[in-house]
Amino acid sequence: MIELFKLIGLPSTQKIRKIIKILETLETECTAFPASTPVSSASLSCDLFYIEGLCTHVLELYPDDAAVAAAIEAFRKAVHSDAVPIGVYRTLFNTLRHALYRKTGVQPSEWDLIAPGLRYGMELPEIPTAAHPADGTMSDSIPAVARPFFPGIYVYAEDIRAPFNLGSIFRTAEAFGAEKLLLSEDCVSPEQPRAQRSAMGCTRFLPWKYCPLGSMPAGLPVFALETGGTPITSFPFPKQGIVLLGSEELGLSAEALKRASAGIVSIPMKGIKASLNVAVAFGILMQYWSASLNNL
Image (tube, helix red, strand yellow):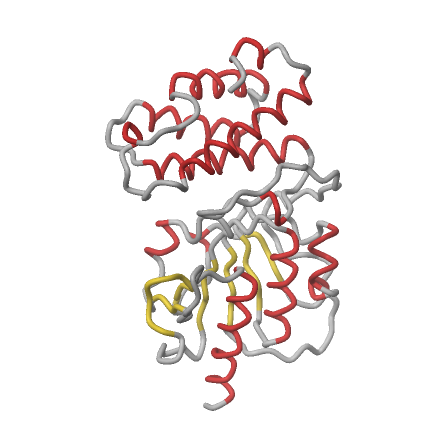
C-alpha cells in the first residue's frame, strides 16, 4: 500500500484513481470474511488509522460534496465504535468508492463491481454522464403513447450501479407491463449511454423517477427480491404492489428490507455459485408476477 504522504503528493487525477483502487482493494478483502466478523479479526492491507487519514484528505479535496462528506462521516463513526463488523465496513468502502466515481465523471461498468469471491479490474471507462434530476421528478422524455400496462405494478431499483443492468431492468419492466420504475438517488442515470443501449428505447416509454424509499406510493404491498425468502414458485404475488431490487454488490439495504411488509421472494438455484445477475433475476420475477396477473 502506498504511503499516505506519497499518495497526497500525487497529481489530482492520479491521486483520485489511486484512492478508488485502494477502496476497491479493501472492499474485496472484506468479502473474504463473514459479514459479522469483527474488524479487529479481519486482515486488511492497511489499518483504520491509514484509512481515516485517507478520508480526511478526500474531504479536503471535496469539502462541498454532500455524498462524499456523508460517506466519510459514516466511516468516522464506525471507526470510533468497537461493535461495527466487517460487513458494515465493506458497505462504507463501497459507498465512498462510488461517490468518488461520480466526482471523476465516470460511471462504473459491470467489471468495476465487486461480488463476494470475485475480483474485477479497475479500468475506468471514459463515459460522459448525465446529471440526475435534482428534484426526482418524472422524466420529461416520456411521450404520450397508448402503452398497455398493469395498473399499480411498480418496480423500485435501489443503488443499481451498472448502466447495462439498469437498462436491462427498464427493458424487462416495460416488456412485462410495469406501470412505473422508481430509482434511488444513487442509481446510475437512465440517460447514461450504456443504459440507453441496453434499454433499447424503453426509457422513452416507461415512466420513471428518482424517489427516496420513504416516498414510495402509499397503500401498495411492498415485497423484496432477495435470498432467503419464499420460493418464487409458491410466493403469493399481489394484484398490485412494489417490488424492491437491490444493488449488484450489496443487495437491498436494511432500510429497504424493513419496508418489505409483503414478504421476500427468492429464486431457487442449484449451482455452485447460486447467484444471478440482478437484471436476469428481475426478468424471472416479472415473468412469474405477470403470469399470476394474467391468470386472475
